[in-house]
Length: 320
Image 1 (cartoon, rainbow, N blue to C red):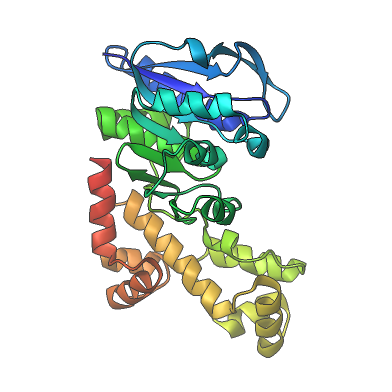
Image 2 (cartoon, rainbow, N blue to C red):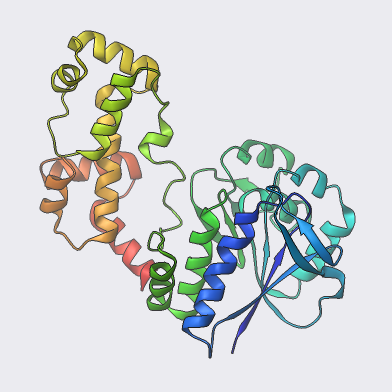
């Protein structure tokens, strides 16, 4: 049986919030036509709806939608402050959510769900830039700004923009198994189903970009060569600085000390290796520059609050 996906848009919506999940579901339908998806787009008023980037999409009138909805998905957009004041839109979303098996949002689309009362007493996420405002505006909503997406009951919320692709792939995996989600990801040439608990922020995203070109080169070298000698003396020599000066300006310009940045980068590498390879822990420790399984365990647990083995098992169980 094909599942009906209804994506809610509005003037000024973020095109990728709609197009990313739509392509995931449509590709799943192509690969598994007997039990795939049918994607529809709806807005308060039928007709062309302009996205924030000027591209226009055709939408049906939400008030005229009838029948069973499998997944109601709300896009986000820069015009969201205006949309949450549109009572017709908010009330229509609330009504349709009551008929849907599953409700979801991408990016700050969570504000529409919250305004409709659909996120009360739930743990949710949104784009990190909007997380504080969401929590302050809706006291009954538990906002976690870190994960890519969160599933709480039948409500799914995701972080900004392309995290909607991760959300949709997770839904495909839940509905039809990881094999189909993997094939969809391969067909779209995207990262293979990042787990929802993965942070919105990689180590480079957590740190500030250095103003100095030698320091930017050092930052890139660290991330690309986790198993290299990344001691302060070695990095300082590459940058043509004294160790003391390098450590001081690196910390000033990135917000992290060189040692802290290196450890976080290696932890990120270890996490990726655990998720996408079957390497034993001693190989993972060596390839990410942490040396031994014991050091890998200590660093991984410090950053992710879970052991490397448990992370791999959780990731694989999400994938299966």
